Image 1 (spheres, rainbow, N blue to C red):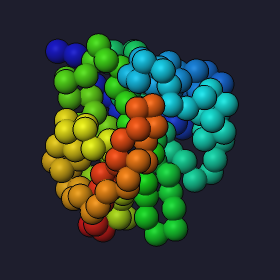
Image 2: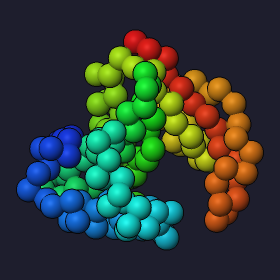
Image 3: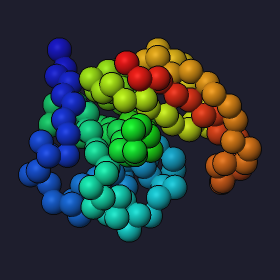
Image 4: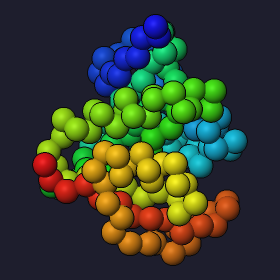
Length: 151
């Protein structure tokens, strides 16, 4: 049986910020074919006091992450990504389970065409609130705004 582990940035302190940024960038590049974020944006995001990163491991390999932004009174999932070779195996659910420990309202945006992700979010209590027209680029697409209320 494979061991799944979800850990926070502080638990992954064996990696420098630059190493974490490179790892995140590699995952984003795998998932999106071309990362929507530059390596500089990832480095800057990791440096923010309001950002938390959670990693999911298969054995010793980081196979995915969830990025969470702490806003005033609520949280935003800014990114969740799992390497293509590991998708469909429950790793994203493991990352989302971490959010069950949080009581704050949480929101996120997801591509309108990404029905798999929307189903995952609904499984964890998120509901659709509306649409942001032309929110995404390359390709241009609407975003579905989803929110999980305070628990």
